[in-house]
Structure formats: structure tokens, C-alpha cells
Image (cartoon, rainbow, N blue to C red; front, top):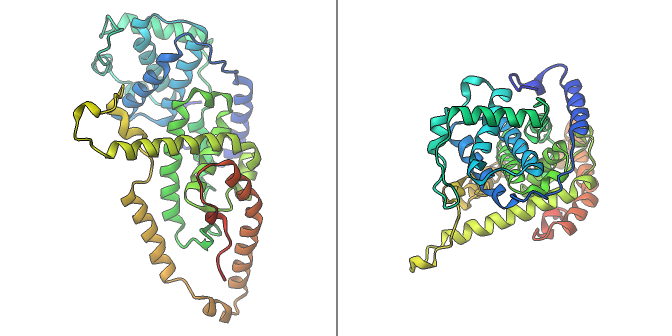
Amino acid sequence: MAMTVEWWKDKVAEDIYDTMRKKEQDNFTTYSCHSPQLWARRQLVDWISVIVENFNLDMTSHHLAVYLLDFFMEKLEVDTNHLYLLAIACICLAVKYEEHCEKRPRLASLNAFIPSHGLLDIRKYTASELRSMELTVLSYFNWNLSIPTCAQFLPYYLLVAVDNLDLRNGIPISSKEVVESYLQKHTHYFQEISLQEHTFRSYLPSMIAASCIAASRICLHLTPTWPKSLELMSGYYIEELLPCVHMMIRLQQHDKQQHSDLQVVPSNPSYYPVIQTPFIDSLYKPPFTSVEYTSFHDDYTKSVMYAPSKSQVTQVKSGVTLQHNENCCRLLKSSLVLSYSIMKTVVGYSSQVWCYPTA
């Protein structure tokens, strides 16, 4: 289904979502990781990310291109000199289907991005070679590119990803818009890293999208971790998402450690680590630098400064205010069991995130 409109804002969004869930079940294929060229996957996926970034392509095209690449290479072995040709063909087909033919990058521009590599005897492909590869890929998939991906489900879940009753570190949020902006930044990061690791192919795209939301809420210390609204919309319980969420946060911690290590510039140039594709480092940088986290913390500090004190709240006799506080406490208590299970599963997260606020 071409994403020409924002379907998640349509009146029949629920019906479209149900159709996509059924389609993903029908199209779901076990990814066995038996490709003899699995060694080249990461480099090709990173290269596709560079193309998406430089040509401002949509995330739906990005995810579809990587899907076509993965399952084509799963069953067929491609000549080493034509691996980048396959990646180009997957990008072009994905853009034609998900966006518009006019947004398809020109072949000459794509050829210019092919890196120098000792294993490649060719650095420029012709239009006839590209056309032949596109037809080969289309034939392999029986000319069916209507494949739901994580990027198609995520906008639908983001509609209810943040609620006014959410708590951050036990304190009610005061600006839903601020939290939504940072949550979207985190979900974008997590769906990026879900493309890097082929192990995510063992999960349904809708489950990966839901896990991106849950992992982002954990990183932002939001409770409950998986609100009832997200549970009802997605159809997933938090227990179903835990394995995928655990993998995402483990990779995020690894990326954060790598990024912090690269900040230390050694005096000896020979000490520099060998990085295969250094120009893609910025694409996978963790969402929060120290400056950005300080800014996010300051937004909440300012909000809490103007929040009513405990004595002021107890003086208020408004039924709405009292009901709001009761709902917050109820949500916090109901989330403790789920939060505790995640705390045991996800390594490296402090238990103080899930503690009751002090009286």
C-alpha cells in the first residue's frame, strides 16, 4: 500500500490497520539467516541508510528496500560485483512503490555513492543492468510489493504514545508536546537500529513498531511503561514485547558506549579504531547527547517549578483535580508490576526509575 496519504489520520484508520495486520501475517516468512553473503548485509544496509539520508527519502521506502534486500539474499546468491546493484534496485523499487517515480534517485547519483572496495571490480552500473536487476527482484517477489513494514505501523501507534496522565519519574508531565517531540526522536532511532540487526526479522513489523514505542518510553522514564491505550490500539501485551524491547535497549547501550568512546581522541593516530563506513556514524548516534538531555531535563524542571505544591493540592476541592490525582496514583501502582518485570529483563537500568515518589 503506497503511503501517499496519512492513513492513520483517516476515519477508517482502524479498518486499514486491521487489514495491514492481516497482510503482515500472510506475508510473514521465517528469516533463517542462512545467506552465504550475510557478511555483506550490514555494509549494504548502512549504505542504503546513507542514500535515504542524502536523498531525503521516506522511512517507508527505507524499510521496504531493506526487506527486499534481506529476503532476496536469503534465497539467492548474488555476484559480489553486483551486490550494490541489488541495493540500488531495492531502493528504486521501494521509492517507486511507496512514494513517487519522480523521487527516485538518478542512477548516476547513486553510482557516485558506491564506495571503493577491494572486492569490487566495477563502480558504475548501466541503466540496462539496473532494469534487469529490478525485473529479477520483482519476479522473485511475484510482483507483490504490498508488504507492511515497521515504518507503516509506527505513525498509528504514535497517536496515543503519550497521554496527559503519564508520569515521568513519578511526577505528572506538564507538557505533552515536549514529551511527544522527544519520544518521536527516540522511536526514529529505534526503528533505525531495528534495520541494522537481521535478528529483528524474527518479529512481526507491528511488534517491532510497538517495541520502539515501549523502548522509547523506558528511556524517557515514563510510566506506565505500556499504557492501556497502546495495548488496546496495538493488540499487544507488554509481556509479548519484552524480548524485542530488551534487544533494542541492549543495542542502544552498545551504541551509546561506542559513541562515548569515539569522543575520546587519542594522541597516537595509529590508535584510531578501524571503522568500515565512518560516514554513517552520525545516523546511528543515540538520541540524547549530554546537552540534549540537559535541555530535556530543564524543560521538566521549569514545569515542576510552577506545579502546585502538596499543600496547595490538598486545599483544592475541585472534583476534577482530585480525580486527576487519583488516576495518576492508580496508573503508577498498576504500572509497577510491568515496570518491575522490565527492570529485571533490561540490564543497566536503575531501580530508582520505578520507585514511588517520596511523600
